[in-house]
Amino acid sequence: MAELLRTHPLEAWTAAFERLPDTVRIAAEPYVAMVDVRLGTVGPGASTALGVDLPTAPNTWVPAGAGRAVWLGPDEWLLTSPTEAPEELEGRVRAAVVGLGGSATDVSAQRIGLRLAGARVRDVLARGCSIDLHPRVFGRGSSAQTTLGQAGVVLLALSDAGDDVAVLVRSSFAGYLADWLLDAALEFTTTPDR
Amino acid sequence: MQLIACPWCGPREEVEFSYGGQAHVPYPDSPAELSDEQWAHYVFHRDNTRGRFAERWNHSAGCRRWFNAIRDTATYRFERVYRLDDPKSVTP
Image 1 (cartoon, helix red, strand yellow):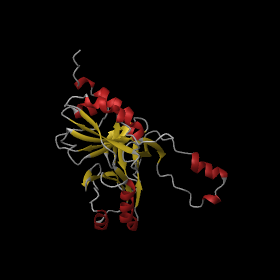
Image 2 (cartoon, rainbow over the protein chains, first blue to last red):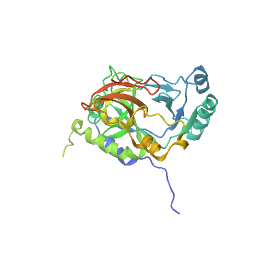
Image 3 (spheres, each protein chain N blue to C red):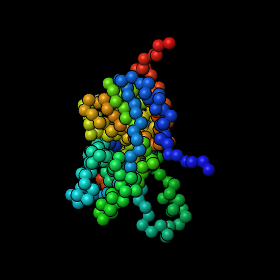
Image 4 (cartoon, each protein chain N blue to C red):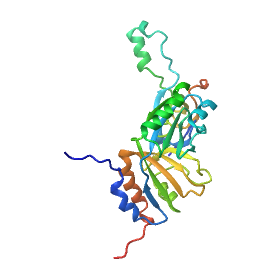
């Protein structure tokens, strides 16, 4: 019987990513557990139970342990954890919020992450993203749900210099977005010697 | 491209939004007592205003929240946006 192995959606793009110059470095992030949290009101009780102050300012994210807590809406957040299994994270978060009238759903399989770093990252993203990514308004801690090359993404600013961005994209769109990013980065790549 | 100011996310491109029709159409108090004609009026009949019109919009590519907007149907200009729980804006 054939053995079914779990593969990363961007495994086939690894070699292409490695050929990119230092000004535009793209890497596929490993799988992390993600949970979608719905909670009407955020108070001290939620912070204590979850161990993180959920961000209430629109379009922001905060570190949550080794993972992140991303604002998705006035009553919706995305919690990620690279150290817990999806069902562990879901169980822990659900136990924390269900008493407060909230809910938690495992959405680990929905999105995967890409990490873009380098001086030209903003130029590459600007090819297909209309929001202002200048570090003056999109510094570390900022996030944005928008479209990049017409694919829906969540952008997370990881540095105050605007040269380090995480892109969360639906797994089924990951290959398309990887191709799109490689094309957008083409003008910053050097032609190999023949 | 026109920017629409999402009440949560701020100004974003129009393609991130989807249209939701006329705002402030109240659900009937007792739908079971309506005649077919009255029900059809609730379901299908909408104002066809020329000028300022209160509409529902959804920031579908962003925070996915519904909000209301006053838009001029002749010029397509958005005059203001407000959240669903804000009172109905006065339109002349």
